[in-house]
Length: 301
Length: 266
Image (cartoon, rainbow over all chains, first blue to last red; front, side, top):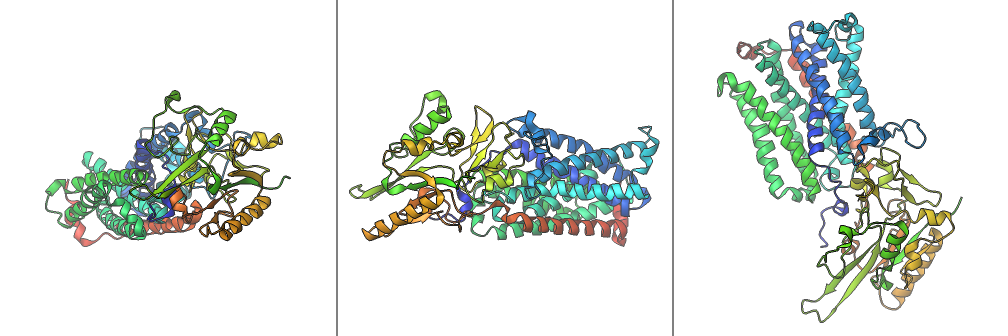
């Protein structure tokens, strides 16, 4: 009874369940896809613009889904606006030191950027008649500003959830400061993977797709290093993963989501034409299981 | 402005009668568990089990017996919200529902809480839970309504042994220190105060006299504020973003010669 590896073992779980796991996944996709799309818009070649459009097409629905999932997870969903406006005084509710408060605002502002860029992508695809819409994406000063700021907010939305978990007193979550970094890197890997999968589905063969594939391999390698760093930084709390969750983390995330995709990238000839899509699908599965393990394992302690 | 108020709980005189639990439930009109059909926990005489949204007081029964049960003791402790001076729940609450009152106590305003449960994971003592009746996070209010009316909290009023004492923090600390000295004098040298000074979260406005390690009573030996990870967590996230951004720029600006073969694929 006297051998607790951390004082965090005396808190109780908040019962964040599947809705939050899905939110972490789709929030990561929203932020990551927008960031990648903005990056391609800003530094990529003109022929890569369809890939950027794809990123915006994924980001906006995912941010809407994220907001819905978060609202549904509240015990009093109709009071979702209390996150933004103080219900007693009707003043703006904002706490810079509370990741959930900051994250609520970031999600709202990012949602606006995601919508604008989504509409800009529709205009470029000639699916929407809005002349000003051609200016909301780079090149051009306005487009560059929107992509730059929106991309930063995207990364914030993708990463703040990890910081939010760290700013609690639950075992695992608050025993490492690296979860935000892990979520940011993982958001980039699953976002690149989702864009590769959807682009292949449309039978695109642009050069940017190969660049995205290569970048994804680099990001997964970084994610692997960060996950190992998380495990080391947990110190004695790492014991909390010496159970079934540890096995799921090892096989589902490290083997399926990282090592096999890296091996497939390294040995590009193994699966021929299906190499990139298989790699991407495995990265997506690994990214989902990562969030699943982190959310549930810390609450089972 | 009133002086900071709180509880001093002397666990050595608690007899486990649970009058505090009953008084708390009655005054605050908290529902019973399972519609009143309680089940036995099998854990000593503790069938309340924990502090949560409908149990704002909880008497802990810690049995310390030898295997043949010929020798041993019970450690009894009436647990409650610690009303920390640096309160983790108040710090993270994104709706402003959790407030510090004029008595330096911490209260959740049920009409403002939206049930996000951030405070539940932030509290280092595991005090807060959702009350299923209201769908909001709830815990001891240190009888805020009674304090405003000049009354003492229901639990300390009901306590028959003065294990739970209510008063100003400065008075309670003096009284507690004298009690520790008295116990040391009569040979109970294990007695000490938990949370009575500023070292623990700025001071607990509900502090305890204990005679064993905190973890034996289910209390964290070294509770911390959740925001301890805010700066480092943020900077590591920024580092992650910068690294990913660099990888993106390198890959989309400078495409290696080895890529050409892959680009041919459908």
